[in-house]
Length: 152
Image (cartoon, rainbow, N blue to C red; front, side, top):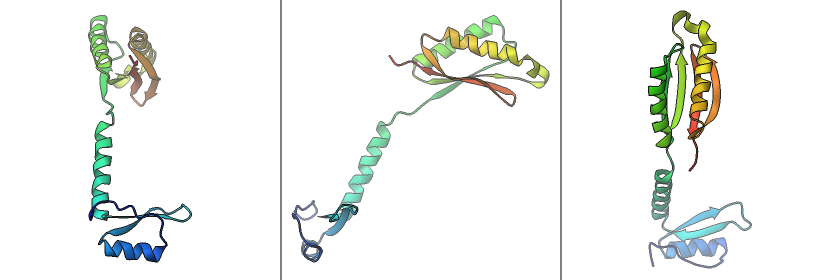
């Protein structure tokens, strides 16, 4: 019985302290906001260990978001576009999010409309397997768009 949680019922504080000392366990306040506060007699180190173990198992079960990137230029030709679109389809089929962006070098920033058209075309081609999370936005010399996989 020592080392495990002990069900002691309802006691006043002095009696609960005396009982915890007698059992060589700790008196732990579980819910301080309750009226009267809820306390348990237990092995505190074991309680902390089990709590950390629970948190770790919950953390390992959490889904990890994978983001894959595809980079285009403003004058990407048809073959390169199709090649990168196939990769994008594979990434979305695997359940990863897709970050597609057009990178403008030097004076190519004057073709920002072409970059936007390219990203919107990609979104339209991938609409069966993915949905657009963020429409194309120009940030400095990059125009970025996010596409998330559709749930099956």
